[in-house]
Image 1 (spheres, helix red, strand yellow):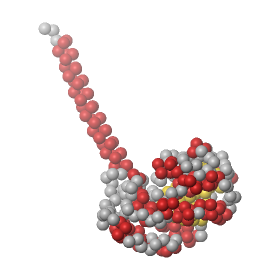
Image 2 (image 1 turned 135 degrees about the horizontal axis):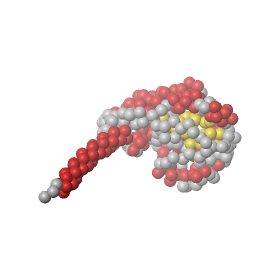
Image 3 (image 1 turned 180 degrees about the vertical axis):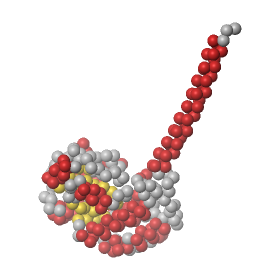
Image 4 (image 1 turned 45 degrees about the horizontal axis):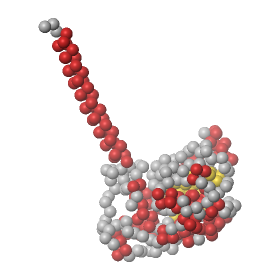
Length: 299
C-alpha cells in the first residue's frame, strides 16, 4: 500500500467508464495514443485491476465498462489505494447500446455478480451518469465524437487540462506499445487496423438501431432513461414498428447459461466422473487381488 500511495501521488489517473457496447474502447484507444499516457485499454468488466507496473508515463489511463461494478465502486477502491482518479464518462443512446449488447456473448442477462441482469447494468450506468451530471464532471457523447472527433477530443483535453496530442487521431502507437490490452473484440480489432481514427470510424454507429430489442425492453429503456434522453437530446421515443419481428418481451434473467452455471455444472460432472473412476479402480484392484490369491493357492 505504501508503494502504491507513493506512485499514485506522483502521477495522474484518468478513470473512464461507459456502457458495454457504448463505444468506450475506441475512445480509450485514442487517449492511449498520447505520448504522456499509457494504461488499460479495457479492464475486464468483472475485475478491478490494481496493478499497473508496466506504466511509466505520467498519466495512467484506466477504462472500464459499467456492468459488474459501477464507476463509483471502482473510483472508491482506487481512492483507498492512494490514487485520485479523474472522472470521464462516455454516453451513448441506451437503446442502441442495449440492442448491440444483447447480440454479444457478454450481453447474456444472467443472475450472478459477474453476469448481472442487463437492466441492473443499465441502472448502474444511470446512477453513475446522475453522479457525473450533479458534479459537472467530464462527459463525452459518443454520437458527437463520431461526427466530429477532433473537436470533441480537443474540447475534452481542454476540460481536463491536457495538452492536445495529434496522435489521438493519427494513432502512431502499435497495439504492442499499450501496457494492458486484454482481448479486444473483433469490431475494435478491425477498426485499429485502419490506421487512423478518421478511417476507422463507422458513421452508421450513430444511428439508433433497435433490431435486437424486444418491445418490453424498449419501453423500459425509454421510461427509465427519459431524463437522460432529454438531457442529451436523444429522441424521446422510437416507433415500435422499427422493432420488426422481435418478440414482445425479453426472456427473464437466468442463472442457466451464465459462466458460473457452466463452471458449477462442469465441476459436478468432473466430480461424478472422478467418483466413477475411483469406484472402477477399486473394483479392478479387488479383482486383481483375487486373481493373485488364486494363483497362490496350491493345486
